[in-house]
Image 1 (cartoon, rainbow, N blue to C red):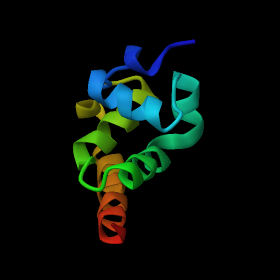
Image 2 (spheres, one colour):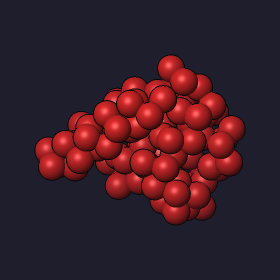
Image 3 (cartoon, rainbow, N blue to C red):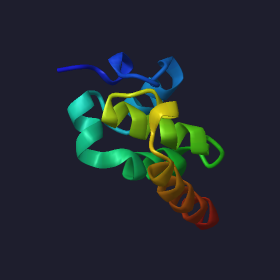
Length: 88
C-alpha cells in the first residue's frame, strides 16, 4: 500500500497536512475523497488551502498529475472550493 507521499502531486508539506488529519495511505485518501480532505485541512488551517491543493488531491486519487484532470472535474472542484472558502 502506497504512502500518500508516494502519490503524484503530494509533496512533503501536503503529505504532512494529510498525516495530521489522519490520512496516511493512498487508500485512506481514496476513502475520504479530495473534497472531504480539503475540508479537514481547512478546519486546521484557515488559510492553509488553495484550489491547486484540491486539484493535487484529486489528481493523487486518480493517479495523475493535477494538470491532467478533465476540464469538467476542475470546474466541479472550483465550484466546491468556492463554497468551502465562503464557509470559512
